[in-house]
Image 1 (spheres, one colour):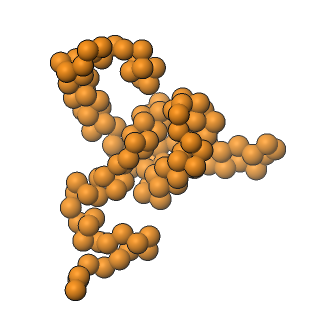
Image 2 (image 1 turned 90 degrees about the horizontal axis):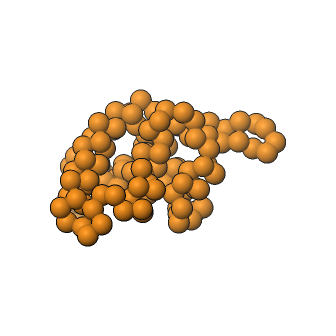
Length: 130
């Protein structure tokens, strides 16, 4: 019988005790880091702008990723009572505290891509996501 407790959203606290598992729970997945990188500039970013820049993400996946980042305290969602409705996203202080680590991961990826891939770090697909 497991002694781990279950938190409100169904995750077990024992699984989140490991820093790597916690990190992956907060920023893991295909879309969360690209979203964080797009919000890095510090200005409020609209949902439609994120969707357009991410390209092939579905509305459901973008909404889910943003909700999870908001629940983790990484992203702040501001909704304005206007017609049409306007929703903007920004990084919280906790989210901004991730940026130095994300920068190190980005540099590692750039160095590895330069050594390991045919197109290197300057292919059109890579440049369009910067």
